[in-house]
Image (cartoon, rainbow, N blue to C red; front, side, top):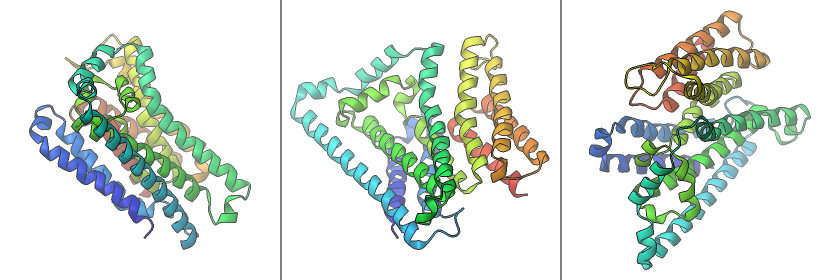
Length: 343
């Protein structure tokens, strides 16, 4: 039952986010944000339900004692994080309420205007904004590589661990810590902005103007990866690179070289569209072949995964308007590769 604190935190975020969504449903529907935020609610809930099975799914020999230790460590980290955030938000709330000048300076509408004023559409700035997403992807590979080295050295076996259980524990713990941090900050920002500390307000100055009225895109992006903890690592890794790397390349190429609009009244370009599709195809081929020893499948299946993932990425890029591609890309490409792997 040591998984329970983490599951309850995730489900708690789902409930709180849902209450916020229902309270603002008219505004969210009007601004075409309702579906995105409803998807975020579902992702939190699903993550809470499946969390108890994440560490041991690929590690049948994992002992109950070791599993309890992993659950307890993760839960301890998250509980401490929640306590620290609680103190920070309470302190800033009291500080603002006792000082009218501070409260006046912490007006969210003024802050939103500052975000709009600071917004930069240049390729350099866009790349900087994509760094956070790319960092998420790089962490996955760094931790998996660390787990591989420790497993090959025999270190993990001394503690009853293997690469999958150890790497997934690190990836999930760091990923959820990141999600919890930004979701609680987002809920404060959107409801009681004056509760945010100065350093948290600085985080959001680089967010997209359209994100000032909703949750930042990084949270659903990370949560969308969680179902693929149950897939072989090559599929999990492919999903991560497609969602971060291919999307970033499509955006940057489109801004740098794009001169033909993909659709009328769209910021997307044909050049970026093609770059995203090609990079998706190449990513799947490289990752599935690079980690072939973990998932030895036929070249036909590899090509099917690459082709169908590319088609899905392009369809999402072309047709999707109201649901974020940070949610749809990982979910649809990931489940497609998973289905091909199973059949």
